[in-house]
Image (cartoon, rainbow over all chains, first blue to last red; front, side, top):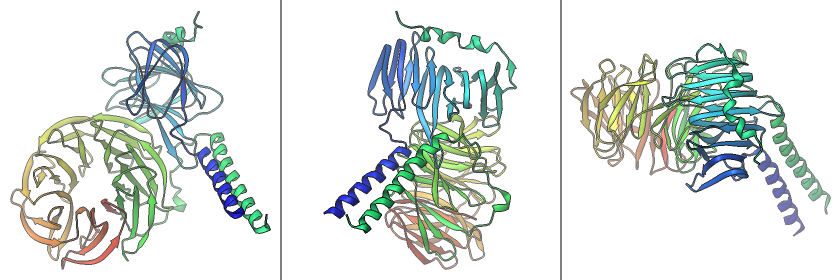
Length: 208
Length: 344
C-alpha cells in the first residue's frame, strides 16, 4: 500500500513537472482588458464571447478576436506582450512549439491593424499577415493589413525582423516597410512612427 | 519508509523538479533564430530510411531502407499524421497533421519531433521547395498554401488557392507549383516568383495526390473518377489520362527490368499496384502486382528497383521487387499508414 502511495505521489509530481513546460490548451494565453465598442471573441468550438468597456476576458489558443468598424480593443498576454486592435481587425491566437525553447506567441492577422509592445525583457512573438511575418524580441510596432494583403509595418521602438517568402529584413526605430505578395519587403524608410499609433490613444485613456 | 522506497521517491522528486526547472529555464533563454542550422563539421551522412505516416496512431514509423528492419516510432505530438516530406540530406522530416492543422518538424537523427507549427485548418499535404528552404503546406479547410521558412519555422506568407487543395508538387525548375483542388476539379499552377495562380487546368473529379516524374511531367490521381492524368510541364496542358480502377491513391516511378520507368499506381479497391507505360497520350498497363489490403502510399528507391507500399487497412509496408513483382519484405507499422517516403 505504502509503495503504491509513493508511486502515485511520484507520478503526480512528475506530471506537475511536465505540465509546467507543456503548452496546456486550457490555460489562458492572455486577457482582453478593454474595448471601445465591442470585442468579439470566437472560441474554437464556435462559441462567442464579447467584451464591452473594461474587463478581463480570458483568451485561449485558437481563439479568433475581432472588432467591427466602430470598435477598438486591448489585449494583455501572459508572457508580457500588449496588443491593441484598431477598427475592422481580426486575428487568430496561435503558437509554435519548439523543443527546449519558450513557446512562440503568434497572431495571425487576417485584416485590420494592430499595435504591439513587449514588456519585461525579450519575448518570442510574431505577427503573421497573408504576405509577411513580423518577428520581435523587444520592441513596439504597428502593423496594418490592407484588403489585398499588403502589410505596412511601422517600428516605433526596437527592431522587427520583417520577412516574406522572398527575404527578411530588419526594420528599426522610426522606419516603415511594406510587405507585398511576391516581393521582398521594401527598404525601410524614415517615418514619424509615433503618429502611426495615434489611433490607439483612446484605449489607454481611463474610462470615466 | 524503507530506504529503497525513500531513494526511489527522492530520485523521482529530483527528476520532477529538474523537469520543472528546465521548463522555467526555457523562459529565461533568449530567442534563437535559425538555431537548427547544421554545423558543417558535424554533418555526416545517415543511411537511407523509410518513413511512414500513420494517421490513426499519430506517429511516424522508421524502417531501415536496406535491411527493412523496423528502427522505431516517432510521435508527431499532433493528431492525424497524414503526409510527409523529407529533406534532401535526410535530416529533417516534415509531417502534416490533418486534425491539428499543424506540421510536425522531425529531427531524423534524434528521431524526435522538435517543432509544431500551426498552418491552417485540415492541413493536408506538404512539399519542400527544390532548395529545401521552404515548406509549402496545403490547408484544405482554408483553401490556402502556407509557406514555412525551414530555418526559422516561421510562416512567411499564405497563398489563396482553389477549393480543397489536396495535392502539391513543384516543377523540376522550381518556377511553378502545382496544386490540385478537389472542390474545383482543377490543378492550379502557381508562379513561384509572384505567388499568383497563372493557370487553372480542369483535370476531373476529386483530384488528389500529385507527383513529378523524372522527365518533368506532372502526374495526378482523380479519386472521384478512378483515373490518373498527366500534365505537360511546359504547356501546362492535360496531355493524357487513364482509368486504373476504383480508389487510385498515389504514384511512384520504377523500372521493371529493362522497361521503364513505369508509373506505378496504388489502386485501393483492387488491392493492386498497376504499372503504366507509354507516351502520356497513349498510356497502357504493362504490369500488375497484387498487394495487401488497402494499398495507399507508394515510393520507389533511388535505383527504381523496389517499391515501398503502405497499406492503410493492413497496417503494413510491403517492399516489392519490381523485376519479379514479388513482395520481399512485409513490415508492420502503425494504424492507417497513408504516406511513405524514403530518404536518399
